[in-house]
Amino acid sequence: MTKETRLVTPAALLLALGVALAAAAAGGKVNINTATAEELTLLPRVGATVAQRIIDYRSKNGRFKKAEDLLHVSGIGDRTFDLIKPYVSLEGETTLRDKVPAGGGGS
Image 1: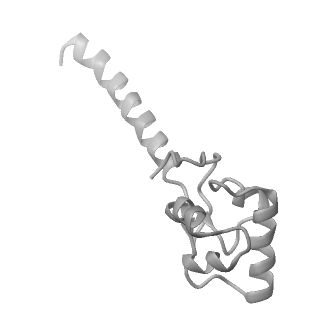
Image 2 (image 1 turned 135 degrees about the horizontal axis):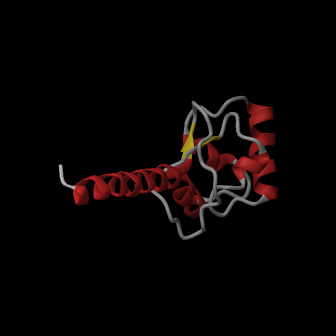
């Protein structure tokens, strides 16, 4: 291995790691069955009021069985649902860490 190869390889690995981390952040999910109000506001077009409505709906009706159940929450219509659906999960950990802009910006 030449000196140039040894210098390029770590740089290439760091670049690949950075790309992978950015992709993971963009593809994060919010578990609507366990998320806090703050975590729910990371979803596009979901502010504090709608986040609280999601929590209230969940408290009254139990766990969401499918993502489409969000359509029963006041303030979430078809357009908003289409924007948030790629970032919603029903199980697992909430992994979304940054607010998704209303135009999307992720998966």
